Length: 262
Image (tube, rainbow, N blue to C red; front, top):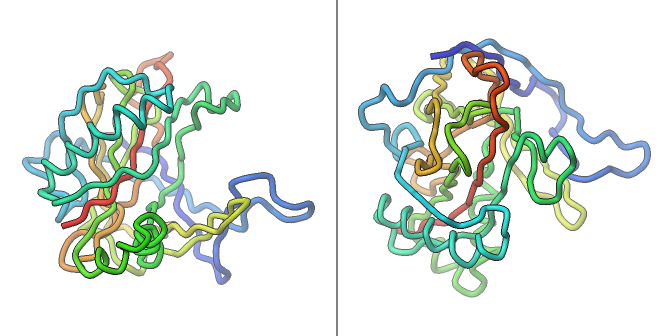
């Protein structure tokens, strides 16, 4: 258990937005203000059996020899490994991997094209609108039929090297969240506008992380579920871990997004 500061969204009247690139001249890169809150982040290893369908997260074993910085190898070799793990763990009849991010604290700070910096902002990657839209974007003519049955967006987050000491990923127990905590937020790309959820703070939120995650451990995070009786969203953020040793090595991680169809 550690105590740290999380960056929530301060309540605002207008719709929040972020540019993912340098915005047009005179346009702010974002219109949001942070709401910094001190919270306790609990050790998820002390939980008996956290569930994707209740808490919205779970830890699984996934060892891989794939070079995470080789994008072609990741798509060719790592995507099938991830699909197999998600299918086995969830019982999904079909799993589709559709993209991934590599994050490296040091390389991201240097502007590397191979990786990004960890995100220190409480968010969820999909919304009630953008979850189904992702199926429509990817599944083409199959989309209407697939949307008639349950599906979920599940992120698979794994350290490239362990143990993770710097900027570990924290996640909020889905059962402690309420729909009114989620604020639709525009991500403005050069060619489209995506939608994620930012989060406003409530004292009932229960935060967890897995200290010292190793490269053969993967975190499954529920980012959308079409079944309202199950955990639907799991807010998450990188955190500053006050228990990290001096000179902690940079966090290196790979996050893969999947669609699981049931």
